Image 1: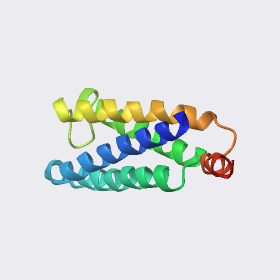
Image 2 (image 1 turned 120 degrees about the vertical axis):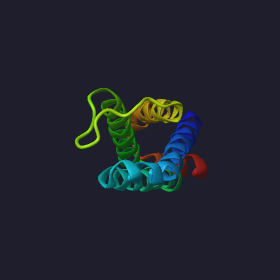
Image 3 (image 1 turned 135 degrees about the horizontal axis):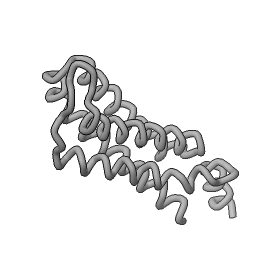
Image 4 (image 1 turned 90 degrees about the vertical axis):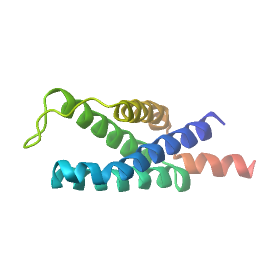
Length: 130
């Protein structure tokens, strides 16, 4: 039961972050084309991670979602502290902070899913058969 709750929470957090990135794509294309492209790829990747975690949960899915979330959160922090090439430092914003906290939560929620020995889908099949 806890494993399914983690899957649902992880998928929800990934979907939330992906949707927000999709909404913010136009703003980031005005800053720099390459940044807009990164936002498009991030939005697609996060939504795909959400679907993957729901449809075919596995350690690989959890690992990929966690790594994408950490990379995205890291990119936000770097863009606000050190700055980005050809863009410089961007200002902190509330929605960016909220999404970054969600991405870090996604990475944390994925950790217990990585610790499981069997695939999550296989454990669901065993429970259904019992």
